[in-house]
Length: 148
Image (cartoon, rainbow, N blue to C red; front, side, top):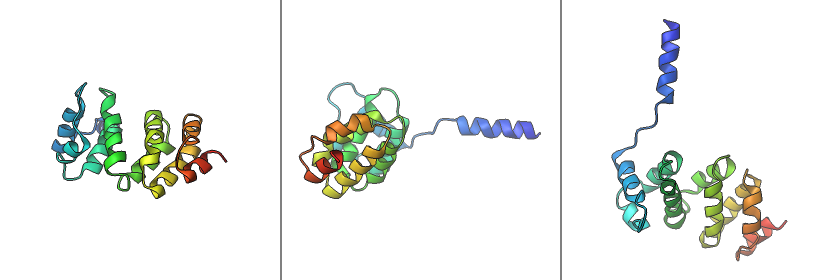
């Protein structure tokens, strides 16, 4: 009986997360190969675009551009609200693409967000990839952090 319960618990934990209707709609919109929708159009598909786009970054693996496009919209349209998600991604293994994307947009972010993400990125697993890019930033505070 106990072994059956343990097996059932293990099986339940291994089940992939089921997307909400909004997450599925965002996925369908982002999975197109060419001419993806704008971030504004994506925001209109969800009452909570930050949560739903972050869910796609974490869960959507195919096609690979879905998560990257979701992350790009989070950076462009919701930098303050998505800061904690980016801090988590920058601090953990397996998010090299997100780390590079973040450095590409670092100069466009509000200063507080840019400096916080720079600090996390420079202490994260992708430091070797992000440090040279951050050192080229036009934001003096970011550049200073990256060249210490």
